[in-house]
Length: 582
Image (tube, rainbow, N blue to C red; front, side, top):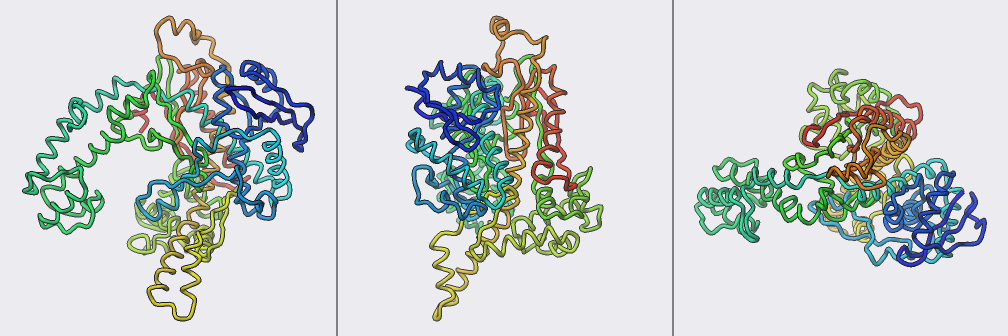
């Protein structure tokens, strides 16, 4: 049973029941927001899936009423998958002209060609979030159901669409609940690192001291360390032959300026990314509320819009503190992508190397390489296409030990070099290279093409091959993470409210912080980063929550890979502060 939800939360909400084929089972009904919440309270106990255009737009109305829903179908997120999946390539939905359901890809900041490939922001702008008409949404939903039914593997796609949609619910819930954050502690951590807060436009004391040392060591009292062109010229005048001011290049040099300069860059990033201005902008009532974007990266990984939630530096993690009487359960998956590769390729030897142990240590114990560092660099080379240096030297040994795994990544790379599409375990497919790429490849094959044309085409082909090589691994790992969180959420929802927990009203009267309703008494996810989660839980339930989180990892593995014998071990700890988790 489905319930289609359209309309505007600020005006009237239209609901219509649909049968299992997406056919209306009755007349539609117009509801006010309070009436819609009553309907959610009454019907969500049934086996019902809420169908709406955009979870981020509709679900907050439910959450603000102190309610949650069990499951939904997010039309926009599911459309993006079905539109591009190889499994639905022959469907009417995949072959229709571009329309309102096709979110335009926004340009993401890029630092390298690989970053451009792997961090394409697929989020939609505010103008694209306008609610569709009821008939439009119904037509789209029916087209999606038809595309899945007629696909090459409906089971895989149904699991992917369900996981993507429950991920959208989790993202909205985490944004609504917020990550507990203590501004007073954050301020003290910044002061310890940077010195007391300075007026706008003035460097804090620690940065000013380092800037003075940089000028002294370079013999240039006018150099501005915040200006890369200015700094680069000063470094060159001092005899340092560098082409950029990036830390990785500076670390190779020996000069008295390098130590204060690297320290300055680190502290400057902290001030810019998570300093006092960030704290005042993003921490509200001791909660961090970032806007997560499920499917915001082309591989299916999440992105965020503002706040930098996907990169919280260690210097400020001490500000992430659980509420009184509550704890954090922090868990991250060990060597997730290599284990995903072992399962994708059904490489039993690689899976066995990680069974019950650190995978890299298992590779060493198998005699493939000498050290754990060697195992890690070789595996990264296999997944990202490194062919030179230490990775290039070790890759042949890895290929002999784990031929299926390396053959899979090589096949994916060759497909990308041809401009072909590759797909994840559940059926998310990679985009095809753009028309410019195709034109360059064709031109290089024409009579009269210059050696430069051929070199450019080969370089572009190799770059796209590196992208598709990792797409299947990173995308399948994102699918595992979605299933992991979905299983965690299901387990947490089944937990009873602890009888010894004071009521929300009582805790409010005591002046204690508490999560917002509907999360004021129950464990809930508050943070997610690729292969790591944080659950905020009443302390009395922490051990039970840790069990749920751990068992959910195994359940996610079974959902994706059936009975293939691959482990997905976790590091799982119960702490009061995020800083104590690692």
